Image (cartoon, one colour):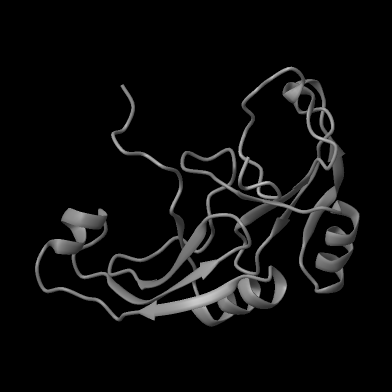
Length: 175
């Protein structure tokens, strides 16, 4: 049995050290659309620990919603953690490690753009093999150190051959 009524990803929530810096990154660098803000939000009871598993006196200073192309929305938080916050995001190898992958039509042009904007790109693009053959990818870091990835497979991936249903593709959202 699957989750009743499940339709897909609505949003991805991330916490950043500075919402203004994150806004510049999402809007100017990635091309996201800004939608609305909420906050501040703080409580004198245990609501924060019961509902968000954070210290009960943590304050959510601000949050902002963005839409990134044909993909999911982003809910970006700036918190004041009552018990301190980790200054660095988890690595991919850490429990809870993660990255956000963004599909681009021209990987080389996107990499050149990021580098020209002073964004740290981790190495050169990698050519995928096996079921992902046809794809190229490269990681890059946000100004606060969160891992993002660029992916491109304009001619498709090897796994697609002979299948009627494929993984969701942001360049073809209706398929």
